[in-house]
Length: 73
Image 1 (cartoon, helix red, strand yellow):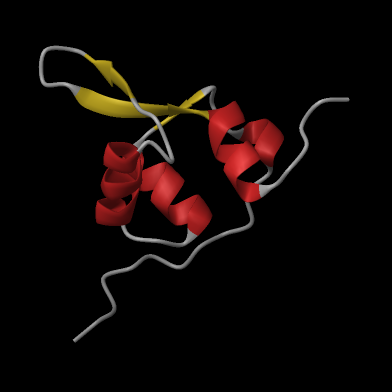
Image 2: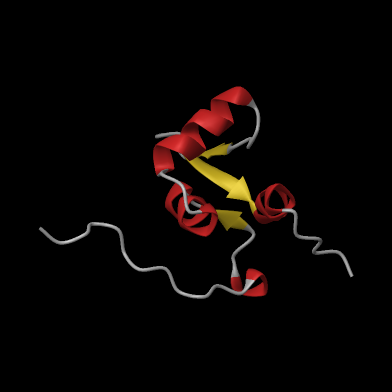
């Protein structure tokens, strides 16, 4: 059975959009999407809800701060 997780590629933080999906954040942090949802419920990683379905988006600044990356110049 093949591994369902796609191999990660090098990602430049400057190339990321301002709002990230659950899957993008999970891949960046190398955790499961369910972990991202749990962190959101605990307040560790707040989400912005969009559209009528309530899809979650995460601010790039919050994710990079969680990574410990200083993006200010």
